[in-house]
Length: 462
Length: 178
Image (cartoon, rainbow over all chains, first blue to last red; front, side, top):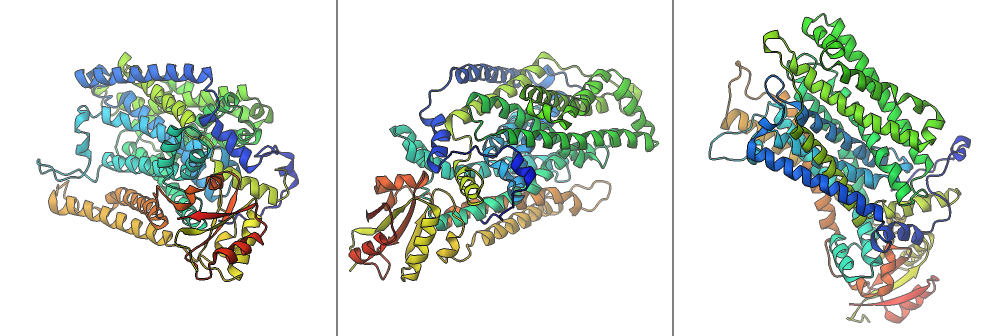
């Protein structure tokens, strides 16, 4: 694939580089590969993995109790039958979206700065979708019948209802997970071959050798590989938009006040990207410091990520504004009441927390000092993660708990088991991230090498 | 005079530009069974080797069409023929409601065909290849670029071809045993 040469402008030269000078083809691979193969695993890795793994065990415990006693142990009931299970589902799947955006859309737009962060952003997508996928299944009530969602000739003679957004959801999330996995693995094959050839011990040679599928870097192979990779990126781009749109249909196709609105698909996609970029920053800032990857994930990357987070945050703020305006402008009694109930009802505190986290807290990113100060940026990213979680909770709960008839109003309080499963999926996510960092190259080696060639051809320091 | 125990001759080069130049010279010298190996895709190599377009895009298109059409037909068959449910007299073939699943199946079919088709065209996974016998070839995933003229080339001659490869200025020319 040819990359059009781009004249470097004065402003671009003033910015920090996307790859620190002084690297060679060999040293790029050695630096990235040594984390997996030779470098001593840091003590912090064991501590972090141990903590995450114990939370994962908590998840196992929570799921076991759920399977034995049923979803009555959660706080869900009529009228709030969805609760945290569904708001967590939406939150997790949204987090995944930034990974696909970085790996696919920025690839098609030839944004070179994506090269050093796409691998772990894709891993983040995969693990977040795995966490998300658990919730609808556990929320089924009888999760062991999850395969009833799939169209197959059953002895009951029934078939799924294809007019239901819940079936769309099963197809969308299933496709999203499969395509993300393919994209991630495909992107990794040449790097696994690098590890195979770099490893000195027998076990890694065999394991990475098998996973590398016999890759030998032939020009014919690269040609087909790149075409498949770019086409997959082109397929993933509309897919990522469709997935969160379908998730929003779960809400928008219902007639519940606050959900039945045409703004939901774009509003959900923007929110997904916002929380996803917050999560990328939450992972990237500690990761580059812990593994001293500042040469690959430079100040420039962090700065660009912060800008994208701010931009998507503004779209989300605009959506909040329009949502409120339309509730008032519709003249619909129930929509108007929903808005007032959200702002001043029993869950009002959460609404103001979400406005603070998602709209106010992100504003310092207009200024360079905030984007350059990693403590400030990390704090803001955490606040956005929190804010987006609260937003999904508010959307699910405030609409359901008071809909049309005051006689059917109710309330929802998460129980300890809601929280156990939620904290448990955090453990699952972090456990998988730790294993990923330890076992496969977390930065795409071959793409960094190509980047090095491009940069040196253009006469930039390399 | 082809040696039946030789897969080909391999020249080791150190930069992508050297590899490009070497490939062009080899093609000009009339060699046809030429393959280049590199740690990352090198710009211009496909044109220099005159490889022509690959069939990957066609396979992806076929996968997308098969996925999409079968996705729609599945929904049509389930909702109209196998298990029709009358909801307020609405049509059984309610196509707008079938768009999301059709779309997802299109993407799924195209992606699966793309990845599997690419691997199949490349003949991967392939656990054994003659080139893996050479320890030096391990650097193809690190910082070395290789040009291989295969023994099946009609112009291949162990001595002649070795002399030709040495004229390209490689750091080494290696025999690849079959």
